Length: 252
Length: 385
Image (cartoon, rainbow over all chains, first blue to last red; front, side, top):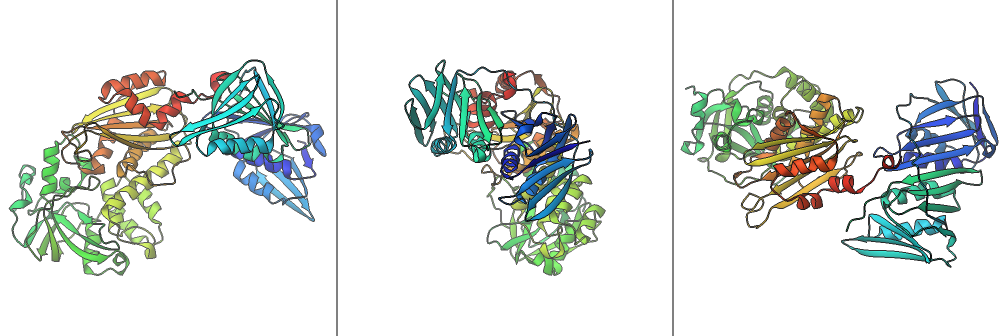
């Protein structure tokens, strides 16, 4: 068995470990000749994370065929944290028993953790076509979600040709944030059809915090009463994380 | 003088002596006022015999409210004020009570009270009502046959309280016996033993056992259908809905006007609490019944080796004139979940059936249930594949 994936900074792995830990306790990575991927839903099947990290994004990547590598996320995340803020990470496997993490930051550290048997089922990507697509700075979207979250647990996102509006309401009050099409914070916007849908803010706030950490911009896509998809870049590496979130039926 | 079960109806109001001779079920009560200096002591009826049923709620299913209240009113409570740390220090009073709490069957007692016992009528709804009580001067017990399982936990002073509770439960010791053992400081690491007020110990036992069971059921596959269980007991209506999802739990109770917690109201007062898959960090505001019904539910799922989301509803109608504790609710929901359920393909159908068994209108339940709202309003990714 040959699998080696090396990056010169620990940032991408940190983002991945944090992102994955928001949805599952055990993570199954799929390594192929093309690169590394991960896909899983959270236990309630409301959210799905889909990671795609092509081989070209690594400093070194070797994989001779398709492997499934399953780890306990809390263990894995703790080891990734040992890399500090700089330094390279090399992850490799020689057999089905262990995953080896080599961290280099002044001195060499080597950890081996047990690979475990995967108990999760395959998570198919939902079949969706999106009528609205907007791109914002990561900070802007995080800021907007936090604004609405002060007063509400759910967010209504509404798009028209004129712009996009984020709304929240609860017994405590109402909040709204509007970005007109001309706003400098709206880096790109395409609305094929006006769209309106409601989502749980708890998921969004956690996900933007975790997956957004290495992403300059975030692209959000959705349609009327349909799931939302957020796209995060994995630094400059060429990898990306898709986060799908199922909508809520709007309460009247 | 030996009495038969039928004669147990004699109420303790007939007792006007300072000397009480009788068989404790075994039973004891630890108050919570003045903590850590609390009042505690044995409970016993003024006669000898097989009095076990008087303080063993597991045996009450099928009994009427009058019968249960009679059991309770026949119990005289002698009490002494003492600091909770005395569980370790010992002394004859505490040690005798600790031994009583290990008893496998009723124990004959001779109790000397400092005044004639007086009837108290305050029921707090969580613990059980009693007959008259009075300060205790002294008491003597006859030989006690101990339950080996509890005795073993008592002598194991390296066993953590939590593990002791779970081990007793797994060895089929009744919850009411585990609770007494915890309350009198019979369980736990040597230097952490404490006397625990009865009311707190009930919830501690329910909480500890159910948390352990929940960790187990999270490993099991989910049920395959929506299920509704239904039971009427003591003018309470119980409905349990199990959903083919991951573990989550909600308990909602509705007190009708003229019941204990809604004396003045004109419409039912509805309260409840919910926890998701990862559990809760704060005490459930609805109180002890939350933990006792979570135990019933986790126990039923663990028996079947299945996982589910669970919503338990209870309507308390005016015929339930005296609340007889979380015990009644635990045993009723345990019984309910042993019945054969009605099964459905989806939540709306399961809800239609559930609401046909209840009297409060549908909208009122839904607006009070975060589990229903969440399951009706939140779509899943799999709905779009």
